[in-house]
Length: 149
Length: 149
DNA sequence: CGCTGATCATTAGCTTGCTATCGATTTGGA
DNA sequence: TCCAAATCGATAGCAAGCTAATGATCAGCG
Image 1 (cartoon, rainbow over the protein chains, first blue to last red):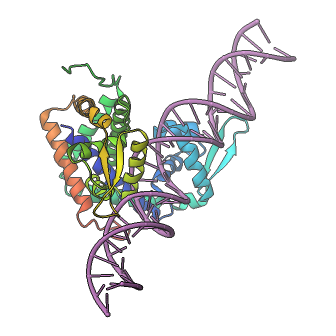
Image 2 (cartoon, rainbow over the protein chains, first blue to last red; image 1 turned 90 degrees about the horizontal axis):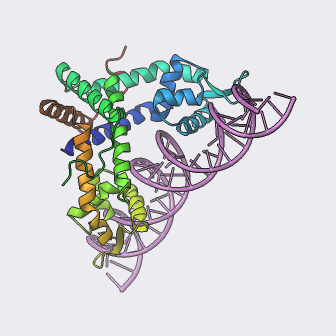
């Protein structure tokens, strides 16, 4: 029963490692790729907005943004209307990486699921969605003394 | 297509967070739990052996072991026959945590997959195994210029 | 018997998550 | 108008991965 959790962890780890290797060939680490995906679509978001979209905490985005700034992928600009806000803007370098990285991601997804039939892919998709829904909705964490003993 | 990867990442993250919270109630963090699972079965393994079983690098085990030693969960003992080796032995405290933690893990797995039918669970299981097999076997990483362009 | 190469664990340093805290800015109420 | 509360981003510090480099010990060969 607990076996599924292990498989899920292992699969995710393998995929993440492969993604990181692929992205790194384009000068982008796997975590930065997620930020890029959102900013390619909507440039100039704040760290907080980005964090909400990525379902990650703000400090995570701030730290990643700092590394990306150092790598020349984005710049921070203070919002003129509200001094608390910082807006993240992609550089031409980041825009130039869009096509190759999107392609790399597509290839990886194809490769990983190449041995699955369309039906299996659909089953996997729906099973994962059910798990996610289950873990996000309400989620009374299964504390001890629910049905135990 | 790339959607499945996102779902897999998200599901794994949710599960890991829930597991960490559950384990923490027993004084064990989620990464340490993996070490415990192996040592409960086979005490006295070396960091290298443990790393191989967990499919993790040796430094990861070393660092986790250091934290666990500080937490009083295990002790390091030099192998008398081979001075290069270090053997990790669980303390009574770690043994006492076995039942509650195993139970917590079981409950979590049950909770997470509660909305799946048995058939869906089997499908999920086999799909994940296929992905893992695909990613481990040979794995010519999908570099650019395979079928692109 | 001694030295060289292999085999371990450890350390250093990085990425990516997290929580908790701090500092600055804005806003709303008195 | 001004001060307190709310809202942000940034920082500090931890866990858990990784790779690369260090250091200790062993084994085998000359």
